[in-house]
Image (cartoon, rainbow, N blue to C red; front, side, top):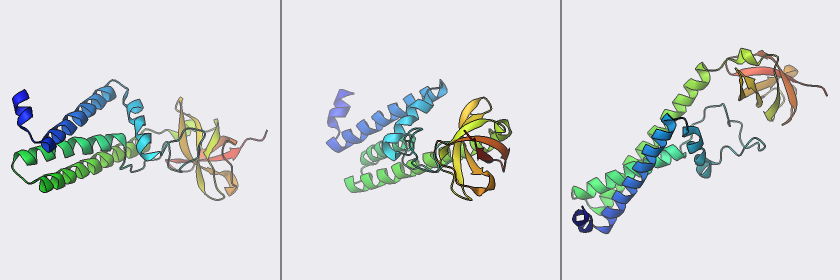
Length: 201
């Protein structure tokens, strides 16, 4: 093994090192997902996309509970590194030039990145469309998480099916409601949106 490694060109050693490192990360994340730790592991994706800045920051109308296509997430970056490393190393072993090996590695890595991002995007969409029971929110009190604009939709944080969730919401009468305003859920408007009114203090 040591003799094989020492015979490799420095670039090929780098490719194999990258491949092994990201493959181990992939296996670790896969195992932790199976035992229920995957959500916290993927939380590291914030370093790449900064989509979720916590409950007190209103960064995006698509945070929490709304499926978005996130190309640059921890899972997709791991997939890129793993496929880029293995493809580059194997193409160099086949005798291709450095430039062609790197180019093909980038193509394989980019394809893996897109496929992984798309897969989890579809999984999130399915989860949101089939697992929600918005009728369980009716009558519950919550608070606005993302401003509800006049005649528009925002998001609220409210108890749904026994757990706190983030749900698309419109206000009764189309009035605007600011972030952190206490609200009460009145009814469901469709499979993903509820109607709310502010709670008078």
